[in-house]
Image 1 (tube, rainbow, N blue to C red):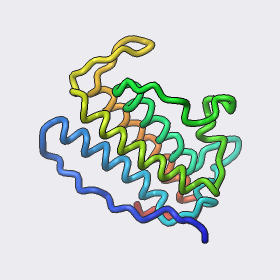
Image 2 (image 1 turned 120 degrees about the vertical axis):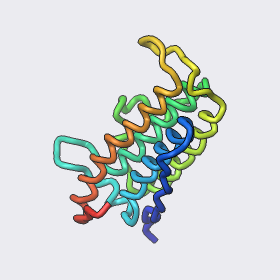
Image 3 (image 1 turned 90 degrees about the vertical axis):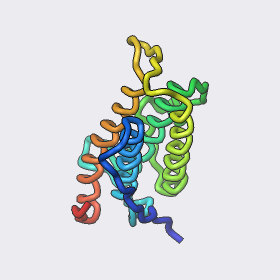
Length: 171
């Protein structure tokens, strides 16, 4: 049996609330939009690449966002020391390059788990917390804003990829 990405219900986004509630709700909505764009596609379809020479694919975006969730929330905010998610010998773009449609469900599930763990790490921090980066300092608030932007940017890519796969443009 061939695995197919499940249907996703987009969460309700209420535009009223305190800052933390609004930021977390917008991030949850952005995460769901990416998953919704993948809904109904097989691993083979998710792994289809865009126009050469680009290595962009929906599966690559799923893998990339799992890595980004892990890096910003668990490692940066949570301070966890974790092994690299993908083989470092494959280079910094292994999330886009090392695709296997047979692993699509595991990659999809990994993103879901990283989002769950990211939410847990975020729950332990204040938006006002400031952490050191390699190039200065960054607040937890800025990290959440960055992640919303990251998902928004990649959702545009995902929409174009989906349209190339099956013509769907309704979401």
